[in-house]
Image (cartoon, rainbow, N blue to C red; front, side):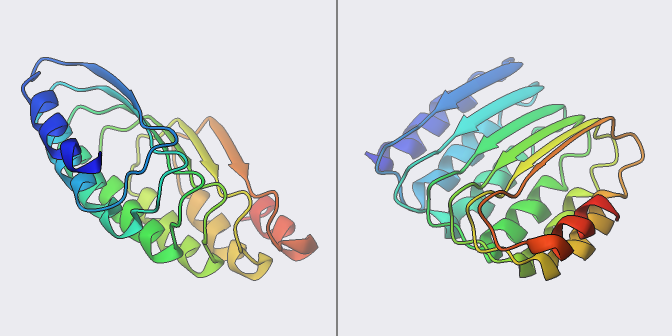
Length: 191
């Protein structure tokens, strides 16, 4: 159960020489504060350069996402980060907090985030975009916001924010299943 995530995180933190870590919690009943303890444990892996975490199809733990990503942000050598949060009950406010915490990962060159099929509205996208824009070394960026409640009017400033990456070579944005219409598509295509 979720209460053991804290213990699991503490055990992972003992592997201080770990350089790569992949954990898949797909389709469990994880909900709550224990996800933050997992982040704290991962944050103790000071040599971690690559991290993949999947929390797809859980019970919704959005309010604790910031604590998870804050712990991850302490991995000062982290260059590659993949976070899968699809099919939960995550809102735009949670996405903003995730963006602010990811901004602490200054060595990131590759970032893949999936928030597909949640409860995200477009208002959060501008702040989120500018937050991750502080990861100035990004070369690869993939964001999946498909199947949410995003309207096209919110994408213009998001497009501006994403256009700020000086070294970006690969960009993939997924917005299918929202309410973008032509105006929203133009906003992303022409930041």
